Length: 331
Image (spheres, one colour):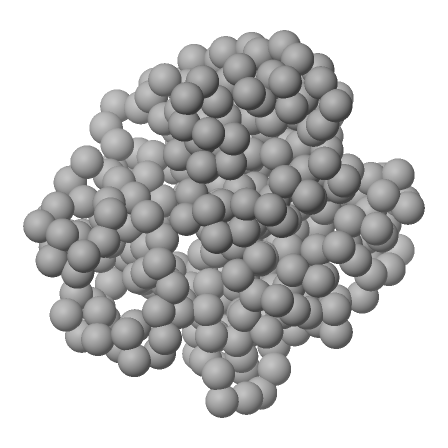
């Protein structure tokens, strides 16, 4: 009988197409650098024609985190919705190679699998344009709630609130996870997403989430741009632990009204920031599964993020030996 899953990640199953551009290209399409925007199939086709083809790799925020957790030795499942097309088959194959169990659905239909054009500027920052495709239809019928076993961690990306059926699924997942004594972890995903659904984020944080990840822009969009750490300290007294990543400035873990800062791990050269936050969450949760302190969790999160910053794409080939390199025992 297979071992029960330690983490089940839920998200929009997306295939990334990575292209290198200049800052002027971002300005030309009227976008803010570092943001994410949704487009329809025609909008995506137009961008591909102008900037593609790019390097294709399976992506999606929570899928990247799931892959990182698996590479760190955790037993992980992933729930998303794919079409039975080339993109969907590539996504499933890539994810399986990392050791993640695909627990979602791949269905026949007119909607293609989701895709994201990731435009990387010379400073390594990425600006994303996403066509959700079939992934937007993710709902309760795509997942057996019995797979959220006792004491499992449910990891949810905030992007799910852009899909009404997926937002409903998040409530069901939280209920199933809590009934089994597990933890609910939420990633804010994107500042624009937070602004679109601030009320839902706050409601989920106060009633369901045990741990919340977000970068400076995302946390500021949630609690206000001035002194976000102070506001998070107040929220954490009666709410979840919050982790704010700050790129080269490191990260801050806020729990029970206390804030701890952990420096960033060094990176020789930032090649591509795609997936850095996702891998930070993977490292952090892998240490959490081993019972490490919040500060040690942040150390492993920073180390995992550094691994992906120095390469093209959101998933490192290996994370073997990484916990030991920062003095953390995950056995």
